[in-house]
Length: 450
Image 1 (cartoon, rainbow, N blue to C red):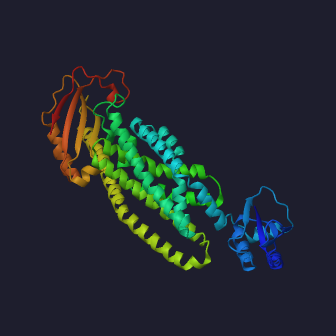
Image 2 (cartoon, rainbow, N blue to C red):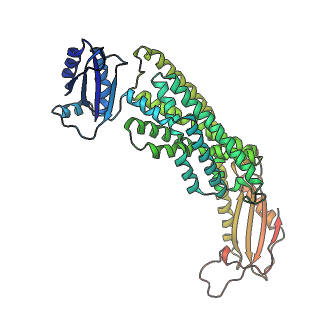
Image 3 (spheres, helix red, strand yellow):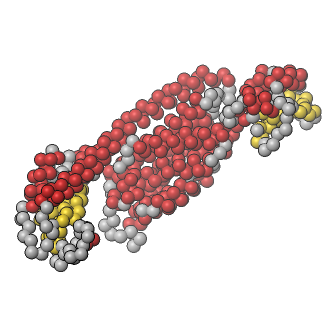
């Protein structure tokens, strides 16, 4: 419930009270002696979703838009007309004035915003290098990105150009600062003993996750934007929602910075693309939800102009997001194709070994080195096969080439096959076929290429 307090201008008391009576609102009236142009103060309880409607009717009764008004959240209200008001205003949506106030509170001062964002980036960058999901999530608690993301959409919907401009500016400059911070930190860490020489950051799972984005990344961003909007409109869970928004933005920005630090343009570019896609998706989903929720500009005279501006902005963001989504769709398709190739290769080689049924010979492992980038660039898949053989068994010298020819025929593409051999020993009472862990080599494996 909300408790609304409004100063009534001179000569408007009767019309204001009549309006409240017509709307079925209980109220209390107090004489106003502090300011000469007001004759009374009226206060009344109303559900959150009814504040905007009741205030619009009071505006028609003579309450000016800039009149002194306070809206307070209350825990308990006892009123004879409360049940009827709850039935009339069943939703939980807050008024546009309250939405505007909350959006302003969420966007911190510049010094606070950049301090927390840079600290969050430092922690997230460390988490990426350590491959620690817990550290990355901890960094997201610090990141203050929810405020600018929400205030940009709220400012657009309510025709507050200053708020909208500041929200967009903080998001763009903040993420650029995050990329720069991660790049500087990466360069500094490379000069210390904290990072092993020759570290391949693309092989770190937390980094690889951000350098192979797919269409599923959009669901995180779209869901975060919608959740942020709902949390503001209903006043719950904004802290946790802020973590989700930060997860979609800060780790990819840190990944892009590390790509710059380690001289890997592909990592820097894919991380930056993911940042831009997520940023657009968050803003688009928030903007659409606020618009569909029926929020209107604070100034009634700007409604038509704002509606056209919102539609054009949604269209521009949607087109940009669609174009970038083509990139994500390409990565998604490439990831599916390479994963399918790896699985089919493993099944095909296992089938060959099962059909051969040579006593003592076991397929220890099959490793396929073939990523989405290799598919897009036309690189050949590389298949590494490890075979366990008894000491007294002679292996064919051209086994790698046989596998190569067979896979090329079955898969419809050229491959490069490497075969390694280890001498396998199996105890007499073994109940199961030996795995890689049971293959104990007496001499280094022999690697043959095809």
